[in-house]
Image (cartoon, rainbow, N blue to C red; front, side, top):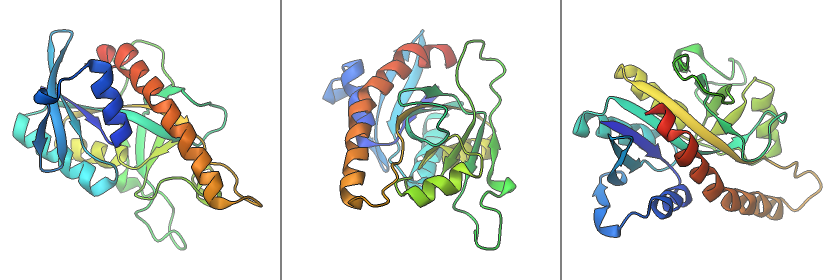
Length: 223
């Protein structure tokens, strides 16, 4: 069994619509919802893990234990950090880091023991790669964006590195497929709430485009 992990509610809704899943096929579990699906004659369990690290990690461990999942694919959106890329670019990161586990005033922002290396050598097709950074706080404020950009992070979200950490602990493969939905905006001299609203609107517009791309062009190649 292969697990496909989806965090945000709008991402989940986009996948339900994309795959035309009848409501009667969707089941509940302690951390969200899931349904079974077949791709390339392989049985998938597609589950909503919800954003943020603790609940996404717990949901992943539940799926591993309950359904004997042997591989997890994290599918969804992310914030762009490295500005040589653009909205809608799709990534398969080769490293996942957590950047909110330290006392950053006196320690490095990223601690090696929380990092997970992701071996992608067997996937013989073209994709963007780099470092995905995860924290419970979404990258919205410009100050946060600059900090993680200066620490070499390519893209960022609120769950992937935590899921990868659980997979590593269980000795199962984790593949992360993320599309850039938006970039943080420099809110200096602007209405901060309005700036954030604009970012959210871009994010919501791009979600179905990204999820369709991932399920059409990436999921079949990695399962």
